[in-house]
Amino acid sequence: MKTVRAIITGRVQGVFYRGWTEEQAQGLGLSGWVRNKSDGSVEAVFHGPAEAVDDMLRRCHDGPTAARVEQVSAEPYDGDPGQGFQQTG
Image 1: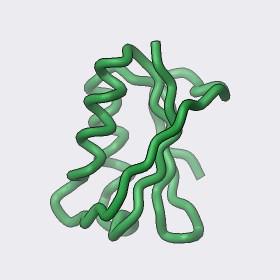
Image 2: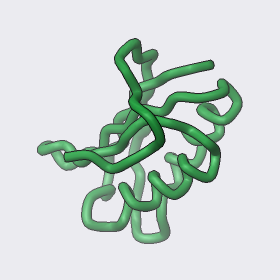
Image 3: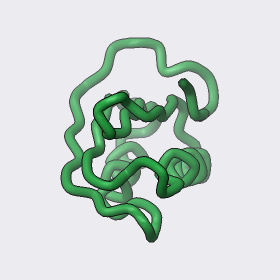
């Protein structure tokens, strides 16, 4: 199992990025959460089998159609990812 915290920058707010992330993560069977940050980026925690987490991180580089992702950075995360996957804050 693998858990990461990702920060996605670019045009990622107001373009259904959080909803898209929730759908993708649930489809991969991941747990965690996604939220907008005040600086215009999106923050997410993904937890699950390493291959599924890596796949989700690859998908984050594209995002939904209206998004324009500039960067996806990820680091190991040792907090509680929670149950299921949901949007927060």
